[in-house]
Amino acid sequence: MPPGRLPAAATAADRQQHQDILAWQGPGPDASAFGAIDRNVGMPVPSNRPVASLVAPHPEPAGITPVALPSMRPSLAPAESERTRIYSHRFRDAKPINFGHASPRALAVHGVDVSRWQGQIDWATLRRQGANFAYIKATDGGDHTDPMFMANWRGAKEAGMRRGAYHFFYWCRTAGEQADWFIRNVPRERDALPPVIDVEWNSDSACKIKMSRARVLEKMKVFLDKVERHYGKRPIIYTAPDFYRDNLEGELLNYPFWLRSVAAHPTKTYPGRKWLFWQYSGSGLSQGVEGKIDLNVFHGSADDWHDWMAER
Image (cartoon, rainbow, N blue to C red):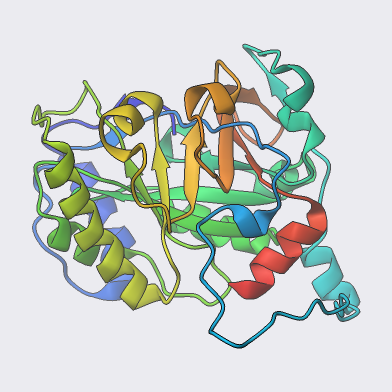
């Protein structure tokens, strides 16, 4: 999620584009101030733990012994098989990092996250380059939508890519109105990835508040609970190292995490934290998109990915 800022006050053209984007869902609140933040995201290198261990397990009911069943994955029709195909990554990196034996390249399912800063994307080409999933910037705060969100949302799906939406949390707005804004702008689709809340400190923001850990967790829970009720999927938490140390270490253990770790092995950056997605680069290069793009990887094998998607 590359850093960037929108103007504090939108131009007339921006407002018209904003109205066009929201036209399908009816009139919305006045978005005369588009305070927005975009940033780069990264994630910890996967350990060798299975996907099932990424969040705290739920205890089995008393007296019930789990039974291991053989895999019974149904055969796929040609069209479905193509849509669920895993492409090997062919990305390059403007600033490559040597992560050692736990390189993200050893993992099977790579993806990207995007926002307006990537401009027009050739989604079919990007997918063939190895983007098997995409997280797309949808909203920040309580009154701003990414102007490329709906175009990216449709384009990724048409390319057969799994995609989800993320919200950049704004600490000067109430959590409830931010959840409402996200819900208003992101379609509820059965095949979408779980929604993401992006929580971090950002020096570019006009909001200079740095809250206590207790207040941060309280606001996050309001957003997480409301969004989960609406979409029927447990949201994923995306965060960066400094914010994690200040607020999330040892917290929210029953939520999946998407972790930014672009300079060191994630076990060093987030010791002891289980994770689902890892953003390992903010300087990726790929056909299908101009400029740099964030690169991410799923924690598991191709079969783990298909199983996780089936559970969604």
